[in-house]
Image 1 (cartoon, rainbow, N blue to C red):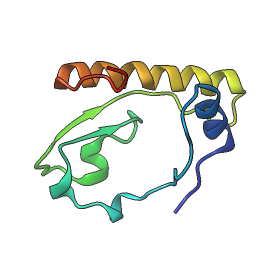
Image 2: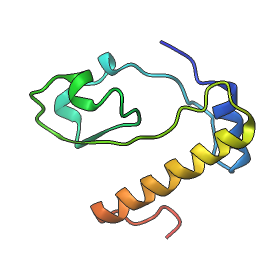
Image 3: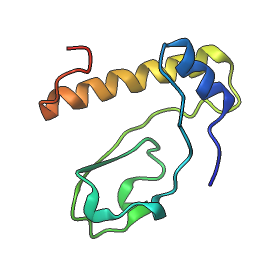
Length: 100
């Protein structure tokens, strides 16, 4: 599988998020029956395009910029954007925040 960019790891660590055990995973290692919700971060590769048109689970296509090759501040901006979107998703799903 691929690797996680050092810029991504650095941004996560600077935001106080542990990177221990993180690894790149391919979709082939997952079973679609196990999904509750799939989120695509790249609007150019929506879930239906990647996994096929007949999906038995919910999905969302987000348009999150790819920071590859950018400076640290861009990675941090993307990490913050993802954090906001995930918190919004958790609220919609009725999942309480990890910090209480």
